[in-house]
Length: 203
Ligand code: HEM
Image 1 (tube, helix red, strand yellow):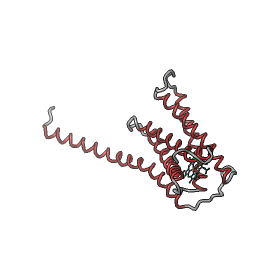
Image 2 (tube, rainbow, N blue to C red):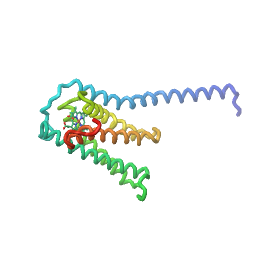
Image 3 (cartoon, rainbow, N blue to C red):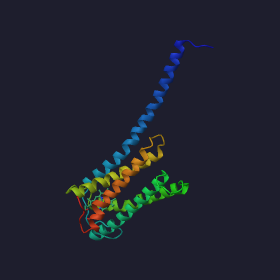
Image 4 (cartoon, rainbow, N blue to C red):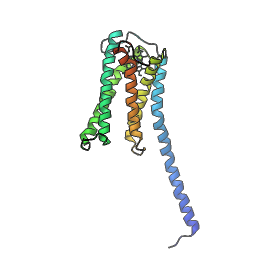
């Protein structure tokens, strides 16, 4: 049976209405996910500025200079894990010439190394936040403090991007790249600074 142009138009309008109605909650939930990394970063910054530093707080039983020395070593291990992550990601994207196509175990390895990096960062950041908080006294310390807060926003963003498969293809490498840059910046501005006799070029 043929339908009149009017009936066709009203069906089309109904369909459009349905699409709009169903895309509205999706847009709202997208906005909610996008605010989560910002909220984590802002929350850490607020806490780091608001609480009173406890310079004597301990890291695995070490305090003051000893704790900072240990943090510099753990931070270097963290950078090592981040670089392994980069190599595994390049392998998965087929960007390492001479290597066969990445298998499932490469993907699992990437996940496990990522989890290990996240867990390793926690005691370091916990000590930094407790002992010093967010300090903006000079450019090196300010860069370090900002990078520390952004790091956990970036961790959250990466997990969100991994779980939301509808996002564009560049989202995952961008989130992963941001994590690597932040870890490198944290290492450079504090761990290398310390291991290099309290000096790094440019900061
Ligand atoms: C919320 C996250 C973080 C905040 C707010 C933060 C903040 C700070 C501040 C204010 C200091 C004292 C400034 C200094 O003397 O260098 C410090 C020290 C330090 N931070 Fe962090 N940090 C964070 C995370 C990290 C992470 C993930 C690393 C790993 C690389 C790290 C490594 C270090 C090291 C090694 C020191 C000691 C430097 C020294 O010998 O004085 N921090 N942090």
